[in-house]
Length: 264
Image (cartoon, rainbow, N blue to C red; front, side):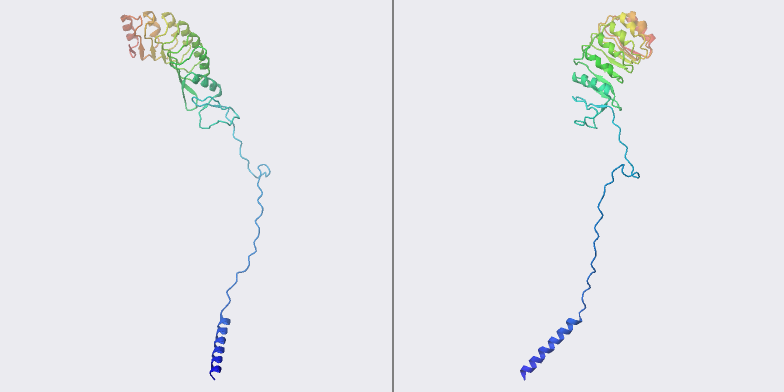
């Protein structure tokens, strides 16, 4: 009797469990998505498609790149060692720049990278090296003080129409050199201290009507004879003649003729 009761209880439990399992809804299954392969990429080559714009080809600047103290000039087509941040010096001036820097010259460039100032004071500059100065067409100031230049070097300076400052202190320039300097019509400042000029050579400077500063100091044989030439420089604001043979009377005459000039 006990066996039948147990059997009946187990059978009931099985029926209940089976009914619950059949009542649970099945989870939805996502529909399968068919993947379509991406089309292959075909590069567009300029010129193949008439509707495709072409980029313009940049022009190559025919200039040489030179850096202060550099030994190499980057030429057209020479990529090795080229630096776009270096100053771009015109080709015609590049060789001169390298040669003058080799003897100790210091240069200043303007916003166009043209050489406008060069200081060669106390260097090994001589007449042979002076030939490079003629290539510096834009130079405004040159200092050749205490160098080995003579009258021969002045011939190269005569070609520099924009030169307005020239320093020749302590050089061997004589009256013959002043013949060439007299052609520098744009000259505003001229230092001839401790050179070898005289009254005879001073007459070659009478065309420098733009002069504002003139130094003739030292034991130069410049005397009152040169006063008629000096007073032609009406724009003079500074004149130094210490050590010359100009007399006190001559100084007074200069002061009367050039009232706006400081004379020492």
